Amino acid sequence: MDRIRIVGGRKLNGTIPISGAKNAALPLMIAALLTDDTLILDNVPRLADVAQLQRILGNHGVDITAVGKRVGDQKYQGQTLRISAAHIIDTTAPYELVSRMRASFWVIAPLLARMHEARVSLPGGCAIGTRPVDLLIMAMEKLGAEISIDGGYVIAKAPGGLRGGSIAFPKVTVGGTHVSLMAASLARGTTVIENAACEPEVTDVAACLNKMGARIEGAGTSRIVVEGVDKLHGAQHAVLPDRIEAGTYAMAVAMTGGDVQLSGARPELLQSALDVLTAAGAEISVNDDGIRIARNGAGIRPVTVSTAPFPGFPTDLQAQLMALMVHAQGASEITETIFENRFMHVQELARFGARISLDGETARIDGIARLRGAPVMATDLRASVSLVIAGLAAEGETMVNRVYHLDRGFERLEDKLKACGASIERISD
Ligand code: UD1
Image 1 (cartoon, rainbow, N blue to C red):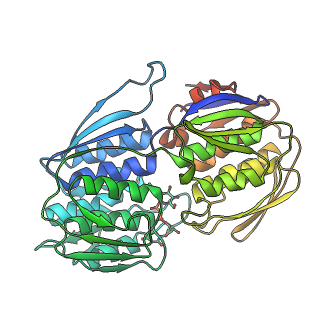
Image 2: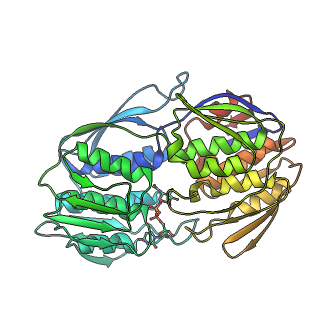
Image 3: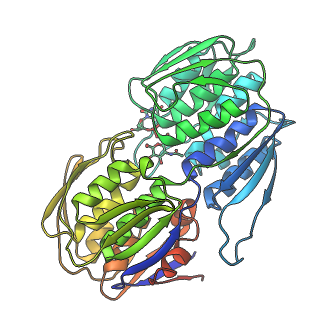
C-alpha cells in the first residue's frame, strides 16, 4: 500500500488548482440512473471513490466513458464522464460494493423511482460513527415505497411508482436530501422537503436535475418543493469546485506560512471556514481567479469552533482545523456536532507532540510551538489529510501510511503541494 513521506518545515507558495467536488460528483453520477438518455458530467475529479462508483453503476448496467487527461499526464485535472443508463440490467446493489462507500446506498432512490424496485445492501458501520440510513428509508416511505429489511439488504418496492409526499427531516441530512430530490423528481405529484440540507452540493445536484427536466424549487434553502415529472432527459453539467479541498489547502497554508492562490475556489462556498482562518491570523483575499491565502510573520491564534450544517463550519474540515490548532499560540476548542466518534485523528496528532484532551464532543487543544515528524496512520479521509497538514509543519520526517484514504478524496494531493514547495513524495511498495 502506498505511503506519503513528508519533510516538514517549508512554507507553501504558489498556485493550487481546486478540483471538482467529490460530494457533488458522487450524487450527480447516481442521478444518471434516473434517465435513459446520456448525462455528461464535466470537471469530475479523478478519485478512488469516483472509480468505485463507476464499478457500482456498471453493475446496474450503466455505460460510462471517461474523456480527459490520464493519470501520469502532466497537470491532469478532472475528467468528463458520459454516463448512459439506457438499460438497467440489475436493481441490486450488493454488499461487496456498497460496503466500501456509503454514498453508494443512494442508488436506492433513482432505482426505485425509475424501476419501481431496488435491493440495496445496508452500508454497515463506519469509522466515523454509526451513520444510520433510517432517515433515508423514512423519506422513501413518505413517497409511497414499501420497505423491508432482509439479510442485510433494504428491499424497496413501489409497484405503481412513487407518489409525491411530505418529508420533514428531524435532523439535517445531506444524503437524505439527495435521495429525496432524486426520488421526488420522478414521483407523481408534489413533494415538500422540510429541514432540507442547504449544502452547496445539494444545490448543484438540484441544478443538474432541473437541466434534466426536473422541477425543483428552493434548493439551497431548508424548504424544497419538487413537482414530479414522468421522464427525465439527458443534460450536460460541470461539477462545482470542492470547498472541502479548498478549505484543506487553506488550512495547510495557515499552518506552514506562505502565500497561495486557490485557483477556481469559490469563497461563498466556504465563508465560515475563511472567517475561522481570518480569526486564526491568516490573510484572506478574494480575486477573479479564486481565493488567496497568506500567513507571513504572525503566529496562529487559537479559536473556538463548533461544526454545523451549511453555512456553518463543515465537519469535513474539523480534523484539518484541529491540526492547525495544534500549532496555535494558546488553547483552542473544537466541538463536533454532526458525527459521533469523529476524533480518531486525535491519537495520531498526539504522535507529533500535540496536546489534546477530549470531553464528550469537545476537544481542547493546547498549542505547541514545535511539532516533531512521526510515522502516522489514519482511518478516514479527512483525518488522513489532517496528518499531512501536521507533517508539513513538523520538524523532520513524517510518513503517512494507508494513503488509500487520501486517494478517496484528494486529486493529485502530493503534486499540488509539491508545486508549492512542499517536500512530499509518494512511496509505492
Ligand atoms: C455527507 C458527506 C460527508 C459529510 C456529511 C455531513 C457525501 C458523499 N458525504 O455525508 O462528507 O461529512 O454529509 O456534511 O456527500 N443521519 C441519521 N440517519 C440517516 C442519515 C443521517 O441519523 O438516515 C445522521 C448521521 O449519522 C449524521 C447526520 O445525520 O450524524 C448527518 O449525516 P448526513 O448529512 O446524512 O451525512 P452523509 O450524507 O452520509
